[in-house]
Length: 463
Ligand code: AMP
Image (cartoon, rainbow, N blue to C red; front, top):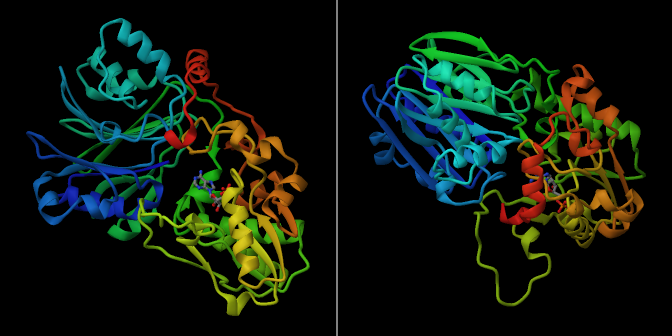
């Protein structure tokens, strides 16, 4: 869960990257950073917080250059500290490099252990740093050769942008877990996690990078390379369910439209005896629209979301019921009073938030609350970069749907089937990763990394 953006050959590259990151803020709100290259020097700024809090006019003016990359981070590997904020900037025998990464590697511990035994000194606990160490260890005349060599050794999920002294390089892992798109801004190449970043800049979406593709951009020209591995792609379908912005095209499909189809399919698979459909904002918005259109039940915005909630808030000393959820959501009694409500959301993870939301809708006057979820039950943690808790914290890993219904105190509960979800997104079913619902992990965590995770389990909220 991170957003990355990069641009090549534009005078105000850092400024444009800042705008790109602004549009990708939903992919990570923990830290953010930009690195620019002016032809002789790398300039960078990284800090904890939101993009708009970090980059002021003066800070951006100092990030001079015609090539830049940026990152918004949501920590899934490595702890949440400034040292792990990206871009990671290093000096190597073949010049300065800066790297940003979206996704999680599945064998970083194993590589790090080997490199440390050979004398490497790591500066962060982030999995991304191993890629730079592998490059530094095998310098080649062309930086892209070193990059390709390093990528052949890592496994897992990565969409990457690398600034070198003579080019900008974009890479997507052979499984294509995370999205990465190529754009064109007045003839100059740009790259982003999602196409919504191009819309803000007025750039044209050219295409998605292919799984295993490495694109080198120099000036207005691009050159494509391919990694040697060619597995069946396993693109993360959860990007469509929850993570991506609805105005983006992900894996060539409009996210808004796939969510509308999920909702419509859910209405057919799990109708409810109700008067109105209410989305949980913002995650359930489009699926609720789809459910409403298909069922003929009116859509009512019966929950209001406060969009200005910061990362930290001061809790009152006196206990307030459901405080954590209340600060984000508030029911609209005038719309809910006496109504049988179909409440639509995208997923139940631990179940604790959902329980509070169901209660909130009931306390807001609803006569009945029927919860509908636009994806199957989340039963398995993600190894590829989505922040799901460890398995025994996932309510659906340990409880039946009826037990979950009782826990969240809904009148009824139903999930979209896996087949329904795959049909709603479209494309070949086997080209998607569905591990969070099925446990079918197509890229295995290395046994070394697995053992370390068992020896030193990191509670998900500490990630
Ligand atoms: P809970 O009921 O505590 O499991 O929380 C469910 C809420 O978490 C839903 O509104 C989801 O949209 C949201 N959600 C789902 N997946 C994630 C995730 N990986 N990170 C943060 N929130 C999520």
